[in-house]
Image (cartoon, rainbow, N blue to C red; front, side, top):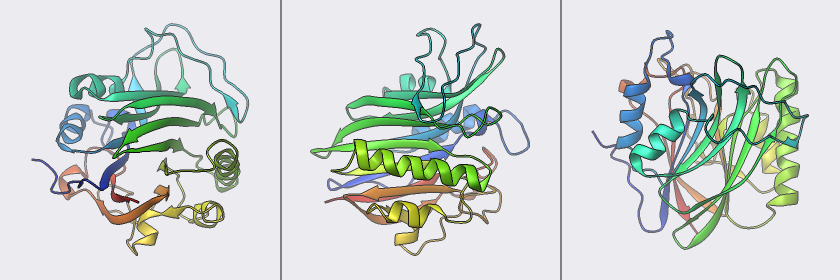
Length: 260
């Protein structure tokens, strides 16, 4: 069934979701049901984290903090995001986070609108927890909009360092124009609000007085997922209904944004 939230001519429907590698909170395979949910959601842009891929024969060398990530071999990065992009005929940008001999996953941005890859950066705080920032640019509703997809660290000190680096990147490389930064911030302390508020960005759920809770999926109590915007107006935030609660350990973060 199609989600009742639709975007108007002056709006964007935006979805951010940690796919949990296509598994339910109990570790069961849930990718087919996730794919069906994504196919029924008429979003202008999807920000996906932990898009899982099959075995890759050769590992990639890790970059140091804040450096561009290496480009994976063209035939080695087929993942859940490329599958859904192909089936729905969506534009796609990919950024790898974890590449191991047996499995790999990363961030993805998908859109039905023209999409250009802006770059990939390694923002891992240490070698035991690989994290990345993916940048792209989308042309929609007559505007060019910068898009950033992030998956941040589990420890507070590490993710604050990552958020401060992203804020500096925005000031340096995307100082003007509409911008959306979304993803799994693991930020239940809301440290991100003052960091990105200082550069003129607004967290959608917080701006609307909504809970923003997406974790754990079966009974959301924490707002780990965030969506910050600049040059766009938060109009509505919602989480998905209970039918999605057992697909991933996070519920999707769904926002309707006005194009100023």
